[in-house]
Length: 97
Image (cartoon, rainbow, N blue to C red; front, side):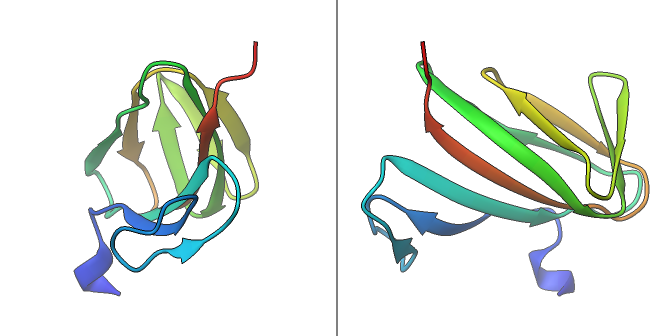
């Protein structure tokens, strides 16, 4: 698992490019393990939005502390600050108006 720390794993996609599981939706699912006291960024493209959940551990986003089971949604780039070895799952999709 250490080799996955600090990188976004692209698990599911509407377009398969790098071996992701293909679904018939305009969405993507990413997962990351973030080491304690490390930072990670997830860029959200224009007209896209992200729903996320903290699967394990805790993380701070814009000075908001989130722990296991907490959810969030954003439509701009996200900066994650790891508090307790978080595992984060993101669902990225077309922005709803």
